[in-house]
Length: 367
Image: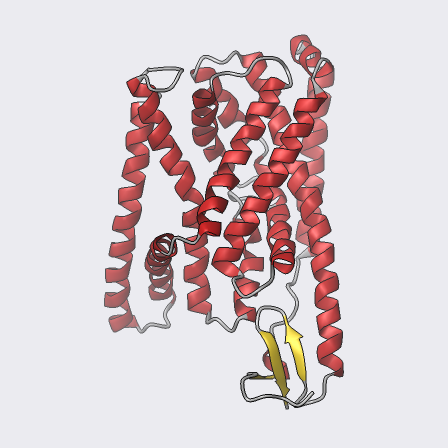
């Protein structure tokens, strides 16, 4: 096939390499995670005083747990929609799913609130030829966008509970106060974005735009601007993905309650989830410990019994951990195979020939 003028030429050496996985670090995290999980299982099985919890697990209705797994998978697919809208708009859905689900699997194992998997998103943007500073801004935007439904959920549901619109607690400390804090978080984020932009301009003038602090401030300010721009674009996949990514995940917790009997009011489950999930910011593998205690603690504050909350939360956490980890591992294997095929195609392509490159489409290989 003769090359055409519309096909861009890319030097062979400028094509980003395959994403590198720190296998030693990953194995270490998986080992720690396995030890913690085995410790929890041993404690539930052997410790005295947990007979009621063991009885709940023995009488679990597995059809609800299966539904929870399906809901978690649906949440993951919505994550892919968000991931593609922010990072992979030029890639087809199959490849976007492989990258997004692989990242979601990494987020299930790596600590710090899911930030560990963003390397795949950055790699996808490098494939598009995006500059490093722009990648940093887009990564900040992605983190902010995936936080928007959580914050809005606290405002809407907290206000609804306080006003009696939703069934559940009307305690202002547990309803109106979180709603006010969430509203304040939105205002603070916008203010920080403006401040970071002004500080970036001052420091860039005095220290130079390539200095580390001005670049960090530029990433923060640009991330806030890009998140607002993406929302104003009204991309239906982005909006539906953000809603579904959170909504399906909350319903996993609801299905986990139903596996052991009746579930609390949905508004209570949502508030307990939205606030309790902040424990995931504690940097431990899989968020084990922080998320669990946060969820159980918040649900108990909303008058859910300790036994019911503990059984449901542990079931939810098992689903939330293993479904993304297993699906993500499969997606990563498929992604590596796709990249291996691309590498072979590039290696045998002579200078001037055309080849399909992930993230860039069809390109002409330069000398």
